Length: 247
Image (cartoon, rainbow, N blue to C red; front, side):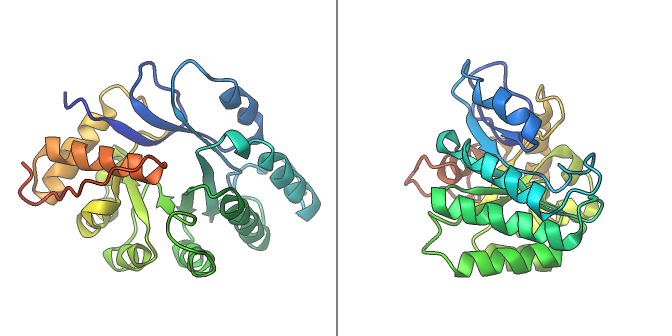
């Protein structure tokens, strides 16, 4: 339809050459993604806060061992993620924070961007990312994407002051909180995603809804989200493209 689709976050490899970042955020999926070479996709490896839900009594030793194994996959990665905090995860809040921070450290060492999962614990997520960002040396080494974004407009602006990118799928855009978040963030931080849903048509629908929310043309939204994908995942595009007047 627009020819510029860029899927910022998905768990399903594309069937064609479209731009996409595929995330393997459970250890059992890392090897499969590492061996996927059919298409020039971006690859993101991480440990989701729910990765230990089936491991009764997982403690600091087991979690740290998983982080060390993760590091062996990051030499061939384009990002670390999705990682973060989840109120419903069985891992203790304290261990979730440690897991999140350990992986942020790996991203800094590898100079990789981070795809962040935040469900039910946005304030804690913000505090951890603020400490991480302030301890670094510039956006290129410490940049992050808040996937499935549905924060309040106020919190979204606070995240944006840290240099955040935001990606939205249909699921978020159909929620009042997701739509408000999508309306409040800047052009330069905007992306779309399919996450775990079928990619067929979902990105086009998300772009159409996002265009309605921001009162601009859908083709322009496709162009800006495509450009931001290239910037975030490491391919520079020096052109400045604003949504206003780009219909």
